[in-house]
Amino acid sequence: MQVPFTGGCACGAIRYRCTAAPRYMGNCHCRDCQQATGGGYFAGVLVMADEFELLQGEPRWYERTADRGHTMRRGFCADCGSPLFLINGINDKVRLMYAGSLDDPSWYAPSRDIYVASAQPWDLMHADLPKFDGMPER
Image 1 (spheres, helix red, strand yellow):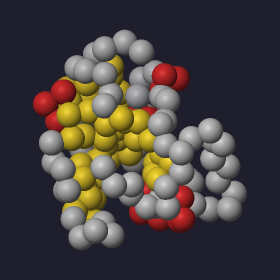
Image 2 (spheres, rainbow, N blue to C red; image 1 turned 120 degrees about the horizontal axis):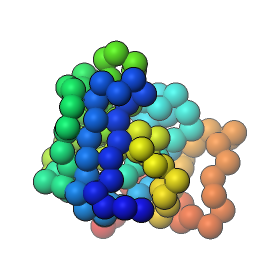
Image 3 (tube, rainbow, N blue to C red; image 1 turned 90 degrees about the vertical axis):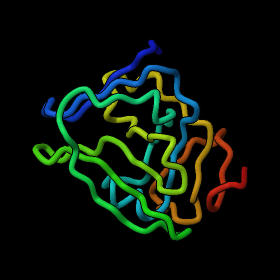
């Protein structure tokens, strides 16, 4: 993995750069993430907000209340529909990128699976990753 790393949407209208290595990478299997990705889970890459820079374009936002009552803001491209990043209202000092939006997603290495109680039976998780039914306590 090279730092800085970059990503963007499928059509190229939105581009971003992260100036530091990720602080966390993990898979979320909650129902909200399943609907947002159209798949079994959200593969998330977390950086601090001041390490994230929007280079080009403006995302469209979808907001939803999370199970703990805070707002989840998901940014996506209005032209091609690509999901790009997430701002979790419980901590607006971080940004979560969708691993699939990275220019080189091959270095994505999740450290755990969360919300596995909501995982679909066809979602085959990596056996070696720690599993949590919900959000683990810090």
